[in-house]
Image 1 (cartoon, rainbow, N blue to C red):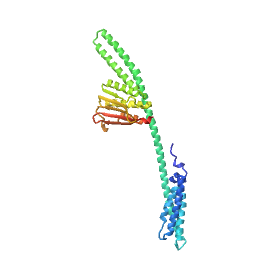
Image 2 (cartoon, rainbow, N blue to C red):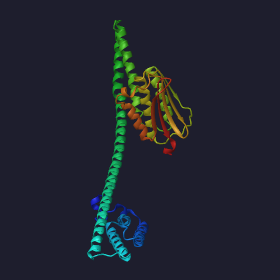
Image 3 (cartoon, helix red, strand yellow):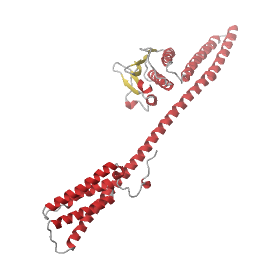
Length: 363
């Protein structure tokens, strides 16, 4: 909900404090204002007329403006002037003409009116500033909500595109390569029947096509792993590590120190954790040249921790990381599930990626 506009407020509500003070406090401030006027008036009466008390009346006037607005401040200002003049007369002050006390009272009242106007204007400006801050805060909150919605939509679209590409690879390119391999095998068999010299080359082509089929199926399977349930996360990580080690000829190990880890029931959490592990492992191989990678899933102090440690060249300096789109995507995925994301160089070599998820946040 947007904050109300300043133009929709009543014109008499100048003091933002007067509009927000509760009735009990208003009554107390009103009583305190009257008591101050009485106390300063008595002090003015007991002091010699040589000592002016005008400046002390500023306090009840200002308090009246803050408590109930400028109109009440004007009333208190008139009361202060009357108290001051009455005190001087009661103390035995003598004036050469009636014009003198009237003139002094008028000047004093004009001074208080200027004070009331300045204070009311200041409070009005502060009220307007607070309203603008509230409006901008509300707009910012709406923008943040909209941004989060768009980010979720982008990730959902990304997952749909992953699945679509995975199906295209598996059902389209995979089947086409399979047909190509069968055709090549038939050609190799015919060449062998004729004892042709090109038989070995034909069989080599068939072998390369079969290797391309295996890679295509592996990529398709990785893209189709979009929705993973909580119980399936450990097995999915284990299968991913095994397939990665076979495909890239590296040692990729999965450690699940506590097989009974209580995972969140939200499917999106498990999927995001899997994607973080997948991106981290691929970065370690492609950019870090890692030969040994360890993926760990464990529970520590009511936190689910996903760790990926490799023996690669380590995290490059910030100046050489470039845009780091993969890192930002991983950090964003962690933020979407309420987890912390840390990536750092390891003193012994390599990189450590850690994603910590508080389990109580999903209970």
